[in-house]
Image (cartoon, rainbow over all chains, first blue to last red; front, top):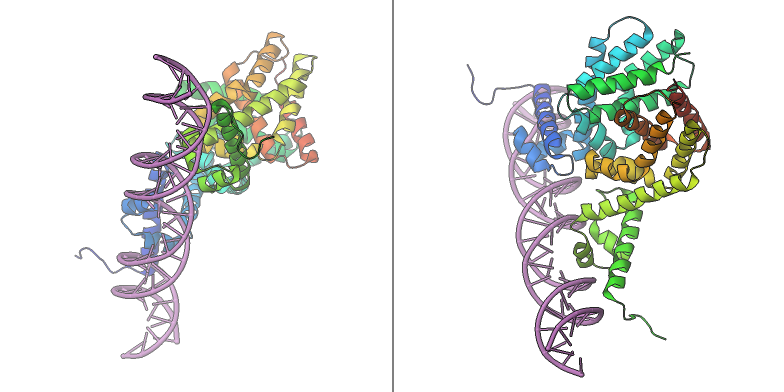
Length: 195
Length: 195
DNA sequence: AATTTAACATACAGGCTGTATGTATGCAAG
DNA sequence: CTTGCATACATACAGCCTGTATGTTAAATT
């Protein structure tokens, strides 16, 4: 039985430190916002020093990027996990509901929809989204068009516009009643695309 | 004939100073973003001192708010000015085109769609938008529903979702070809709402 | 076992924000 | 017209934060 500092491999140390930093940073970025959170505060919460932070991340923004990447992946994972089968439009609706459910986790709207675009820029946020949640929407829409369930439209533009609608709905939703209202309206928007 | 310091009334001094600060701040916020723009830089460009800035504005964020308010009003003014008549849906489309045209003015997407929500929060941005461009969209949709040109749907939610789609399109648009593409897709979205 | 390299910790320089204090000018009252 | 107050600034200061440079310890390599 060992105490305090157990001998760890470098890889283990790195992973533990990075995880602690990302966890502490996520919590503070959510609570106070990116600009109002200082690195001294983050490292104190993570139980390391600023030296460790700047060893693993180029700067504060790089740490934020890691937090956003992590969070975006979690949202996409939940959508994929809950994806049902049925008609293409049914799948789109179900995916949307899963998205709303995932975005209801506290802090996600702030990280992914408010601070993210401002800190990292829309181009980088689009790139991150395209690897995660945005990818599921794109595949759903492409499948629906393929099946002839919605009219053929430029996929890039349609994804951007519907994705924006989903995002804004997630931002507006604060309780179950609002969830149902937005689900209904966005469902109508999608159904309006049928041939 | 007088030189240099002409005797000005206090009201004139105030208006001139505020205008110079807002103009300089707008330029720098657009060029470098809110966080990367320092108040020393702003006051230097405006030809005043930091004392003047903090006399007229509570803090840097209040100055940013004034810039955003000004810009948002300019967008709404352009939409109203270009609003044509015709069927309700035609007016919506024309209003959308005017919106895209107004948002093409350099810096507006960054101020109103990227930094604005992050710095001021979505609630405050919604309030500002509701007084300006968002108001025109809401009135257009309400009129279209009244005329029976689109199905009756919850107005608040529909405004939020379509407003988000317009915003994202404005962010994505970088040239005329893209403008046409997004106009077409957003037109299809609106037309899908017909009874 | 010796050497290199990774993973930190500490110290420092520069810059920025907001506030406190000082000054000059407009303005209103007598 | 001058006397007193308020407005519109300018200057100086304190505190904090970011990023970097330097030092130290432990792991990995040879």
